[in-house]
Image (cartoon, rainbow over all chains, first blue to last red; front, top):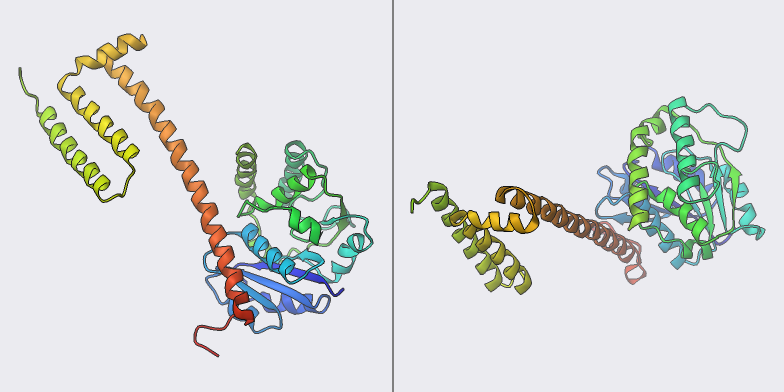
Length: 223
Length: 122
């Protein structure tokens, strides 16, 4: 597990970041937190922990923060990169199962999917929007993925280098999948659990935003 | 020929703008191409205020109804095009800013191999 790096993009997560990072550290020693120009003390909170912390001077979106973290991890010699959300939605205990297919050489990318495992209670509006997103991705990117907006994923260094994230904001999730499809990067899906707490629900993607993301994606493809 | 008030206002206004455009060129804040474009545009606009019947000629050429119609159509299409150009520039700028912010973040972290220190110093 030496060359596994966990990239955690964070925006205004001063309350949760300590807890999340400590939980991750129990499963992966190398972590880089990218503070995406938070207005609160996310950077200070993360800096007090034994992890690398980078800081965007201006808020540029999760996509940009992820790209920065991934680039940093690659420079530090990461062999496998795990992307992890800072709001406590993901379970670090599942990191091992997520990277397993990459370690075993079965794939270059492992995408976490909340729809593969045992059924979980998902707020129905969220489920509807997610399903729409899946259909949208299937049509636009011509790839069959069961969970298109899951920030929990693992990439081999080669895949990480090959995937270019240009969509700063939330459309990056779709962009990553789109590139996996276009560049024919071998990927697998791994069941993961998403913890929907009131906190993460409040911070998460508003369902209306999904439409905006869809439009951005379409425009991005037309460029 | 009667001189209309709007012709006076428009002329003064346009002269004022032409001066501004000229100064921009002199201060090298705009390119020569931009200068030529805007000067031409405003002079043409100015001329139309004094000889509105010229627009009717354009209308006849384009096979549109009235001169004013021709002006409207051309203006709207041009505006949409300019808007499109501005939008593209904006998008590019956003991308540039992001690239800089990202680069800066990594530079500050890896500067001289030191971990980023608080500005208050440690």
